[in-house]
Amino acid sequence: MGKSKKRILHKTNSSLYMTRDKALAEVTDAFSQVICDNRRKHEAQNLITLFGLSAEELSEAGVGYEHLKSMETII
Image 1 (cartoon, rainbow, N blue to C red):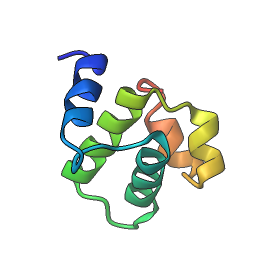
Image 2: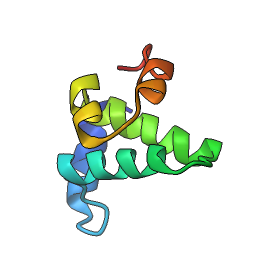
Image 3: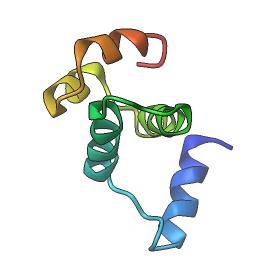
Image 4: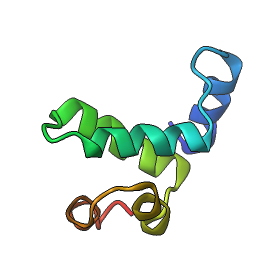
């Protein structure tokens, strides 16, 4: 399923609607925890690709350099 279809589906159900700011906060929260399980990390990576978050946005939001470097292929 493409990015636009996912966004359209999220817009139809108001409980699942997520803005770019909420997605950025969710990704930052996922990577700010010391122990980040694979499922949460995978969800964060999906949000990054879905919203097209850039490395600059993530670093300004507080994601560490090590995490950004590990996600270099995604960003």
